[in-house]
Image 1 (tube, rainbow, N blue to C red):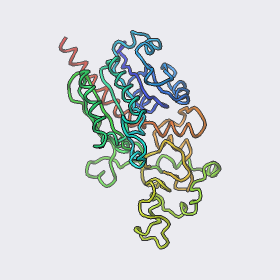
Image 2 (image 1 turned 120 degrees about the vertical axis):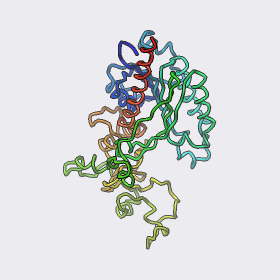
Image 3 (image 1 turned 180 degrees about the horizontal axis):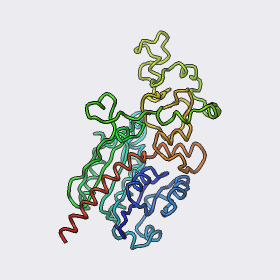
Image 4 (image 1 turned 90 degrees about the vertical axis):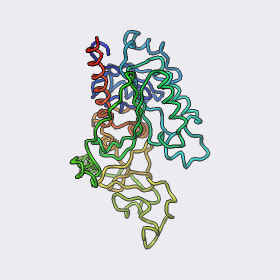
Length: 362
């Protein structure tokens, strides 16, 4: 903590989903890091007080950080936060058997090593490492054990958990894996859910998950109803139009009882012709904009950038560098800020409790 402020260094910052959430939870982002030039542009506009290192994590050293923010700012940093790029740990990698997984993938090796190297020289009071839920799979045990062992060797007590963004007020079913580490040795308390699956909401007295319709309906007006530039379905457009909201290509399979099957059961990736329902949360927003891989709008079109922002809980005015493809990639790769804020407040509460204990001991 510097001058009463909670300070953070952000790695793999992207357009700032984690950063915005932790900033809203009371952390000042001292510096962001990313290789993507559009992310660098977005971050500069959205976090004008922060510095930015545009380059590989392998080249982000203490010397580079000092050159950006000064040595004094790095003396007592509260938090290191970041999500190493997830493709090596993703579910889709199970289908790409010709590609290496986890740290056998050069991207996975460089990014995980870069995160841990930064943790080693920065020595913040806490850290948060985020990734896809697949990082917790048994097949990635060696990588996870390496991360946890390295953190332990640096003095950190760690906790791991998969959080569903929908449980924290995000209108999207998005599972993310988090590692939280702290130097004080006490147990970290995860944030309490604010919403629940409608099937379980009554049991816990929580409001049901927020739906896609609740955050998108006001954007679906006559003025912007045109499909121009957002046509979906490709050669399967006529089929997409017949799929009910909340369903996908499996609607057209014999196993589902369709009288004129068009596809074999589970012959395509699950998001093929996947259509949102206004009465349900969205499924995970992907990092790539596609005309046949969803989630697609219930009006049989590709979602617009302003709609993707809403489903990811970014402010409407959040700046994104690049053209629509680059903007979509940044939003699709981001952690929903509302989920990040819930976790950020839990980390801040943990650090506040430590500070009180330290003051009492002194």
